[in-house]
Image (cartoon, rainbow, N blue to C red):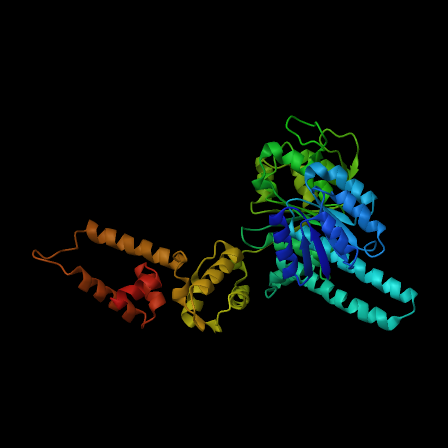
Length: 485
C-alpha cells in the first residue's frame, strides 16, 4: 500500500518510514506540509499519516485541504498527536480524519490502524467497482491490497509473539482450547497464573486475537512497573486540573484506550490495595469516571490479568481483595512450568533454533547428543523465556552445523552439578576433618594430580565429558580447557 508520511520532525519521520517499509509498504516521507499537499493532490495515497503541530500549515489545515480535493478526498488520513492535543485530534475526527495516534507512536497501535486502513480501502475499491459493474476490475484492484492485508496481519501476529505458542503437550493443547472459548466470550474476565517466563502475555494475546486475528486494540499495563502514586491516573485518565501538575487537556487512561478491545493487566498482584475496589466497580458496572471528571464513560473492553505469584495465598494473607480475586478468575488459566511439560522442551528448542538460525543467517541443522543431555538436565527456572534467550545467544556467538554443549556453557550449573558439588564439598570437608589428607614434605605437583582426577572422572563415565564435568562440579567448557592444557 502507498503511504504518505508528513512530519517536520526528522527522527520521527525516519523511524516511521523504516517500520512501515519493513511491513512491505511503499513510503513517501515529506517534512513540509505545503509540498506534501501538492504531492497528495496529484497522486492518490490510500493512507496519509500527518503530524498536527507543524510550521506553515498544521495538520488540521492539511486535513481540510486534502478532503476538499478530488484526488485525495478518499484517502484515509491519520493524525499524530501528543496527549495535550487530544481535543484537537477529536476535532480532526469530526472533519473527516480516519483516526489518530498518540506520540510516541506505539508499534502495535500503528500496525492495527494500518491494517484497518488496508481493509477499509479494500472494501471501498470493491464497492466502487461493483457499482460500475466491472467484476474483473474489482479482482485486479483489490488483489494487492488483500495480499498486503494478509501480510500486515501475519506481521502483526509475529510482532505480538502469537506465532510462538507451542501446543505439543496435552496440557498446552487444553490451554489453547480454553483461549478460544474465552476469545468468543469477551465479557468474561480472565486470570492467567504461572511462573515467570511461561508465556502469560502470549496466552493473553491469543485470547484477544483468536484464530482469525482482530483489529481491536490490545492495551497492556504492567502493574509492577507503575509507581503507586501514578497508577490511578494511568488507568482511569484525568481531566484538566484534576491535580497539581496535571497536563492541560487532561489524559486518556488505559481503560479508555482499550475501547472495545482488551485491557491486559500484568503482575496484577502488585496493584495497590486502595485501587482494587475501584477496578472491581468498573468490572461490575462497566463504566468509570476520569479523575476530576463528571462524565460517566462506558467501559466495553475485556479484562485479562496475569501474575506469577500464588493469588489464593495473597488473598488469605489479606494483600489482595477476595471479591476482586473471584471476579477476575471467572476465566482461569494456570500455565505449567517448563519442567512440568518436558515433552515440549525439545519442540521449543528446535523451534527457537530454527527461528534464530534463519534470523541470524547461520547454518545450524540440529542438536548434538551432548547438548541434548545438557538441555535435559538444566532446571530452566526462567522457563520458556530463559530457553529462548539461551538458544538466541548460542546461535549468535557460534558457527556450526550442530548445537553443541559447549555453545551453552554460559548457563548456570545444572541441578545435578550443584548437588555433585555439594557432595564433593561435603566429602572434602570430611577428609580434612578426619585429617586423612597428607601432603609430602618436599613438593607437590598439583597440576599432575588434577589431570589424574580428571582422567579418573572421564574413565568413570566412559569418556562422557558432560557427565564428568557435572561430577567434578565444573562446566563442560572448563573441563575442555583443562584437557587442552
